[in-house]
Length: 473
Image 1: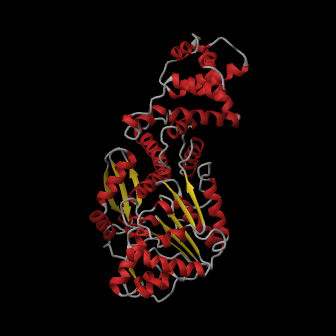
Image 2: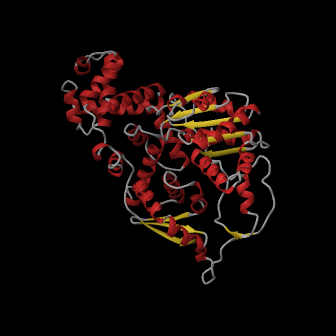
Image 3: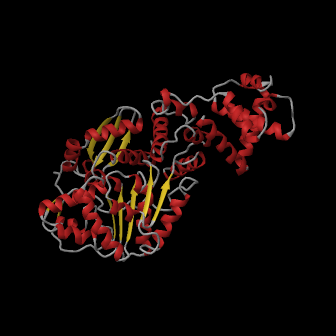
């Protein structure tokens, strides 16, 4: 497997682990590099022996579970010290950070533990895990966000907030299901603010982290430090704010933090899996404040957007995948973007490991545990004819008739194309189903539509819309 593909697979594995591990775990995991992937083994490189032992003792099981989820089967995870090849025989030494009293420069990304936590980390020499302390993911930008009907409004509003923080839509509240792009947009806002206003102080945290810091501040008697950190920033982004519901101390502290920032015209950005009015056990005073600004939702992407997401993923990760394969995947996975991209990564990895060509047969095999009942959702020719006839406002009998007028013949060719593409039916059977036609007629129809859609964007859109409707039946 090429290194770029291997890196993409590892990135998907890391994303899967983020669902199970705290952010601090990635101080250890982010520096790990994928070295090789074979049929039964994933080799990972660590920077030193200490990292290797720590990861093996604390995260090996999580890595193995994530590998199984992404690649669809158990793999042996082998940890190797990357320096061993060039420094064989030398003793491994942990990295020691010298004491520094420097404060983070204004406008830099705060560590997830906060500016004060960062200052405490470097106050005296101690062993640390190497890694990036940034709280924003630089890969999540507006340029890498794929827009469609399901998220156009949220995307436009997010850009407006990023361009004029504290002045447009404050607070900005986004809600939607898991894996639909809320976190991506939050990071994109933060990254754009820092690009346009490097002097601004931006902080992104999860609600869980916010709560944990409150608990720690109460236990250690450092509430003043906590408040100084959160009330002296320009843009505050809190992900999954619904998790503060029912937590009295957290809601009390956030209420005062919100008021301080809002009164100072600082930007507050929140995400949730539901709108404010549907968050149970949320104090009414917070609920009303969440609705002061703009509330927008993100829906599940339609077929056209899902295909665009897969094409974007393939391009960024240097995957070579035929268009029909991306349509095949996108038409069968409509739950969320994370699962959609993960499916593509698994397919490419499966093809590479088995040394096979990426086609729809391989996809069905690689994703058999994702598709319902272990296989792709079954599509019948009856359904295809019904959907096509309804779309073009003609009768099903017209598709099966001998009529050759363009308003009948072209929809018939489209229906034949879809039957060939979405079912396992043989060419003679398709021809027979469409009024007893010869299999060569089906071949001609399939070839014509295949060629036309490459140059006709309108036809391509029609096909995507029809496939989307067919899959929803």
